[in-house]
Each structure stands twice: as C-alpha cells, then as structure tokens.
Length: 262
Ligand SMILES: O=C(O)c1ccccc1NCC(=O)[C@H](O)[C@H](O)COP(=O)(O)O
Image (cartoon, rainbow, N blue to C red; front, side, top):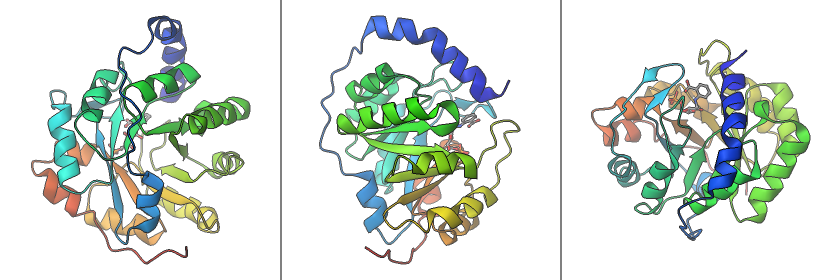
C-alpha cells in the first residue's frame, strides 16, 4: 500500500462525518486574481508558497508556524498564490488554517488536499479557497471529470496533478488550464526534477496550459532547471517553511522567464 492509498483510505473513512458536519465558515468566493493569468502573463517564475506543518516523508517540518503570519510573509515577498494543506492526520493541516489565511491575504489560495468527493470541494469553497487540487493518481476517470466540472461550475480554478506520462494522458482529457507535475515519487518519497523535464515535452506542445513544477525545490538551480523545462510556476513547501528568511528564499526562486506565445 502506498502512502497515497493510506491517505485516500483515511479520507474515505472520515468522509461521512465531514458530510454530516457541513462547513462552519462562509467566506464568500472573493474576486481573487486568477492563478492561471498570473502564470501566463508574468515574465518571472511564479511561486505558489505552501503552509506545510508536517509531511509523511519528512515528519514535523514547522509544527507551530502561525498560518496567517506565514501567509502574509509569503504574500509580501511576492508569492503568486498561497497553498494551504488542510489534511489533518498526515500533514497536520486544517480548514481553520485555510479560512484564517483567506481572511487575511488577497492572493489566489490553493486548497492542497486529497479530494475524492464534492463535499470536500464545498468545504474548500466555504473556507475561502479559489483553487483546488485534483490528484489524478487518486481518482478514476469518471470521478476526476465529475469533480473537475463541479469545481469549475462553482467558479474555482483547478490544478490537476500528475506523476507520470500515463496520468498526464488522463489529465489532458479534461483540457485543464493548470497542470502540476509532482516530482515526488509517492512510493519511495524520492524527489527527482527529471520528472518535470520528462513530462514537459508533452505539456509544452499544448499552447494554452500553465504548467507548474511541484515538490523538491530548494535552491535557485532547482528553480532554474524546472523553468528551463517550461514551468511557469513552482509549488514550494518545505524549503520556505524551514527558512529563517522567507523573503530571501522566495526571491531566490524568482527566475526570469521567456515570454509566452499568447
Ligand atoms: O510531502 C510529502 O511527503 C507528500 C507525501 C505524499 C503525498 C503528498 C506529499 N506532499 C504534498 C505536496 O505535493 C507538497 O507538499 C508540495 O508539492 C511541496 O513540496 P515540498 O516543497 O517538497 O515540500
């Protein structure tokens, strides 16, 4: 059983309780800037900066970080989007983190979670997210398409995450605007930026996609490498959560990009 299987099993187990309890926040879907537009229009690599207390691969990263202070630091340093992990058991995140960040920051907000049901999308929306994540490896084609269409119908943007050519092929059937290549192998936890390079060959052939490289970005050379492969944005958690100088770390990833064909 992979860690993804374990997380999904847990999600299925807690889903009935989630459906019963209904979201306790009602943060209206603010007219936040579009993540897609930021990625397509900017001439620098865009940073999706993540609020990440812990992870299955690294254990505790920064358990006591104040989510609002962290998100404000990210936004002030020029992050294009704040990613908030809301998974509780393995990542020590929460919808409270998401809602409090949404109340204090005006950037696009990505709800990073393991979504398998529409009820979780309702929670994301009520807690203030403007972007949700759908992980192709966690969903069959029918559910993937259903959840994608549901989120779009609510006015949310959707980041579709892939780990392999086969998943990319399935993702492209949705005609998504945002594709994320996750560099982390979910079985071994190894991160390999070659994953971004490999899948970029297919992604770069599609004109109107915005492509994000996710996980394992620690140094300027990492950002340069994925930018060279065509990524317009990077999703960064651990290195920012451990940084003693968030502004400096974030700025070290802001690589100049070639303009896109529009
Ligand atoms: O981070 C993990 O250990 C992990 C394990 C299993 C599934 C997902 C996992 N992480 C979620 C993410 O995608 C990352 O939080 C995100 O890309 C940032 O990665 P990093 O910069 O390496 O913290």
